[in-house]
Figure 1 (tube, helix red, strand yellow):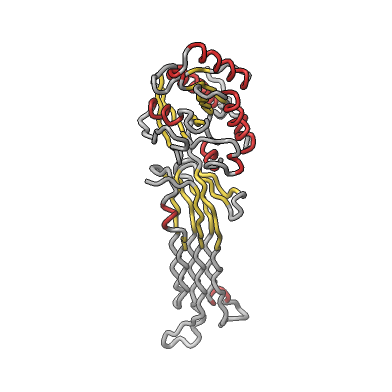
Figure 2 (cartoon, one colour):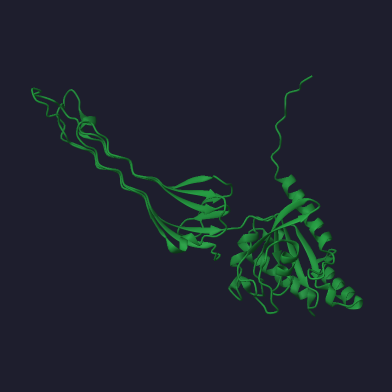
Length: 344
């Protein structure tokens, strides 16, 4: 299934049915009076977060969603039929934006969450509603209310516990393939990963989800390379795993390049907890490993971990460090328990 994380959708709710002007026509009833029914309510457009979806590819083949209009009222006090609603089923983690792509209408973060995007028009009143002691034969009915038409954007932000960051060929996909059942494309050329991948990683009988996104390069926030459009998929992560290629001659500069792109992207992404790891240590001799580790620690101002995704060296220690950060994040976001009354 092809990955799609941004879609433009046109929606329109149904209009309300018109009210009816009608009078009773029974035999032997000279002044039957009005009996026009109301129009039906138009269908609404809803969005619902469902399980089993991780892409917006369905909205590439259908962009227009129009709800049914309500039927007009009829005589004998018959109300028109209501229009059927339309439900847009989206993956969990989808943001619904207005046409300007800035105003957030809704953030679908839980399975079963529903939000109304366009309300159906009300049905018009029939002439029965306008009957009074001074107007016993009204020849007036209201038209139905028009539906709402709007353009929205759907933007998917994958929900994962860990987000992988690094330059192209830093070993992110190799790490994901070595620690989970995910099978991302791995090759020895830049930008092997063209769309995000998810993998379930386990350590010490605890599982968490890791998201791998395409590599960043200097100027990604200006659109260079693949750009920074995939950084939205790690905004919801509890911790970021920053992999730095240990075989590079500019380890410190590589680290600062990624941090600069995070700061340029904004959204407090650069302030998220990070675990910095020097990768591909199996290809380094002890002296060069010590030199690269010292350069990376000087660049980030904190101790760094070492790992080799291919050889499996240090992978378990990195996973345990990530689990510690995830547990701390879940503890921070846990709702405070209300004070229970004392019981003997």
